[in-house]
Length: 204
Image 1 (cartoon, rainbow, N blue to C red):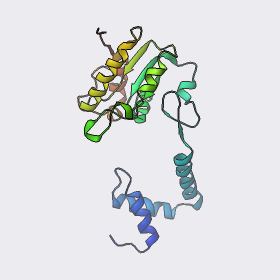
Image 2 (image 1 turned 135 degrees about the horizontal axis):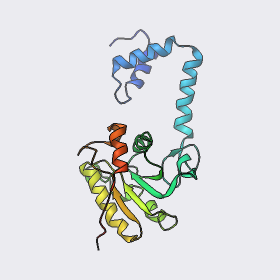
Image 3 (image 1 turned 45 degrees about the vertical axis):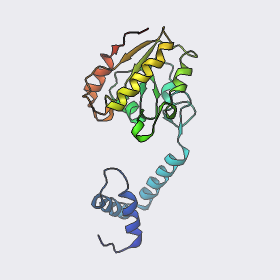
Image 4 (image 1 turned 120 degrees about the horizontal axis):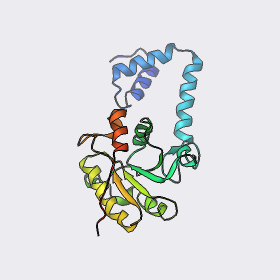
């Protein structure tokens, strides 16, 4: 693809690095930004820069936040006795969009995957285990995508959580297809999975 300007070529190259954006789409976006008002392009660039350099993570649940405590953890109207454990921030967004869950979250930051060199120590598991005795947690909901890695992570967590016999462990109902990702589930299915979660039997 030939470009009349090196600046256009550079912009297209950067946009094409984004997931799901091919070079034709990148070119279309670049030309749109070129034709847009200067203020619009500047506002976009400023918003992206501020997002990248100023965003932080909640010290309690590891969700993205503008402050040390995210808006969900800071909300006194949420049920802080119920913690939904997810692998990724996108899962928090997906569950919140269902409007069916009023508890709080804990974001692991991934799943156990030996092939990719990701072990339990690479995830936010220790902070979850530390969080339980320091709070009013009564139920842990394991809302992890039902993939092989997700099931491995859920199994590992279940074993670790046996240390807390007074905390009920449940998993979201299997309305999510095996091998599916939470972020791609429709809101009705995901919401029903949360509402109809199943408690895991405690093992000795």
